[in-house]
Image (tube, rainbow, N blue to C red; front, side):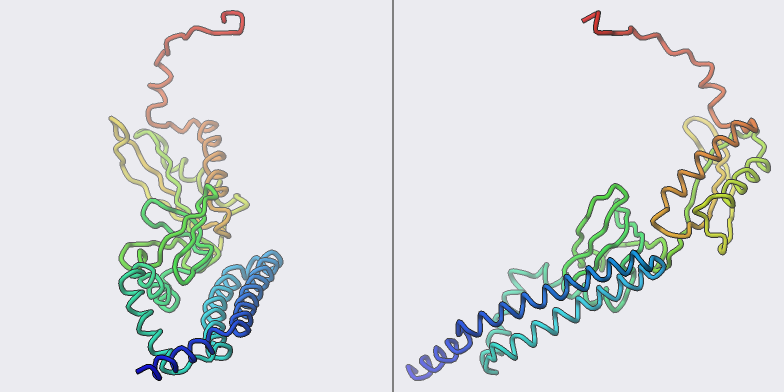
Length: 286
C-alpha cells in the first residue's frame, strides 16, 4: 500500500515538474498570441475585402475552435506526458466535477459544438433572440456574442440557443430584407402612395436591386381608428446599412407624401387641436 502511494506521488511529481509547467505555460501563451494575430489579420482582410467579410469571420471562428482544442491536447500529451492511469483518473474526476459544479458550462460547451455543425446562424448574421436584435460577432465554445444596433455587446450562453427560438435575417448573405411600414388615411390615393414609395426605394443608394421590391396593403387598427398600412419590402445590399437604408426611405418618402398631398391618419385632427399655452421662463424670472 505504501509502495503504491509512493509510486503515485512520484508520477504526480514528474507531471508537475516546474520545467514542464513553465514550458506548458509558454505553449499556452503561444496559442493565445497566434490566435490574436490571426484575428488581427482577419480584421485587416475584412477591411480590404468587405464582400468576403462573412466567410472570413466564419473561417476564423472555426480556426479558433480547432486551434485551442488541438493545441491544448498537444501541450498536455507532448509536454506534461501524464501516464494513462493518471489521465483516466483525472478524466473521471473532471467529468464528475463538470457534472455537478459546472453543468451549465458543460451544457454550453456541448451546445457550442452543436451550433458549429448545425449552423442555425453564422458569424455576421443579423438575428433576433428574445428582445435582443443585433449582429453576431463571435461564436465561442461557451457563448455567443451579439453587438446590438446601440453598439452594446451582449453575451448569451450557447445552451440557450438550443432550447429557445432565434431568427436570422440574412442567413449568411450580405444582403437582407428590410421591411418598412407607412400608415395612410382610408381615403388616401393608394396607387400614388405606392408609386412614390417605389421611386424612393429604387433610387436609394443602399438598395439591392438584384432582388425584388414588393408591397402589401392592409387595413390596420391604429389607436381608435382604422388606417391603411402600406408595407414596403426591399433588400439592403449590406446588413451594416440596414438602419441607414430604413431612415433614408422614411425621410424621403415623408417628403414626397407631403409634396403630393398624400393623406395620413389623424393628421387633419392633430392640426385642429389647440395646445394650452405654457409660461415662458427665463433667467430674469429666477
